[in-house]
Structures are given as C-alpha cells and as structure tokens.
Image (cartoon, rainbow, N blue to C red; front, side, top):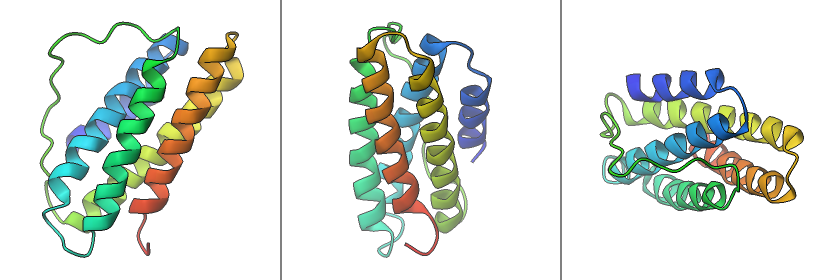
Length: 139
C-alpha cells in the first residue's frame, strides 16, 4: 500500500496541468495493475477489480489524448503492484486514490485553457469516480 500512498502524494503535489496529467497517468497505471492482480485474490471482489481495471485503462487513454500530456517515459516501471495485505483494505486504498484522482482531474479541467485538455480531464475524472464507486466498501 506504500505505492498507493506514494502515488496519491505525488498526485497531490503535482503543479500545473502537465504534471497533473502525468501523475494521473501513473495513478491509472497503478490502479490497473493492482486491480488486475487483486481480481484473483478475492472471489467477492473479482467483478469490482475487473471493472475497475477497465475504467483505469479508459481513464489512462483519456489522459493520453490531452494535448498537454507530457511524453510517457519508455519502459516506465512502477513499484510493487501486487495487493499487499488484506484485499479489502487494498480495495479501500485504491478507492481513496481514485477519489483523489477524480477530484484533482476535475480541478485541472477547470484550469485548462484548451478545450481538448478540459475534455480529457473530465473524461478521466469520470473514470476515476467510477473506480472509486466500484471499490469503496459496501459495493
């Protein structure tokens, strides 16, 4: 869960639209990787993790269309992507990251001068919100 917390902090610290988009890309990549691994950890959470993985790919793709998105480093590797600890706690942590991501992307959309950047941010924020709802406890 350290990687989730680190990614959430990097997202919070991102300044400017390109930095928010890059941090958002990383967050969606991490969510997709952990959701993919977590799907096999809990039969009860399999559907939520599977749909969250799809929403993360959709959000990442939306960000990729933003004109202000900086180039993604080739071979960018993430830290640990296996669910570490209780799978319910991992799902909660991912839901928290996705909620923060949705808020940050909506904030960035409000500051974006370019219509395509604004649209990409709002589309990705919607996907992040879907992930948060899917993985929140009680769903």
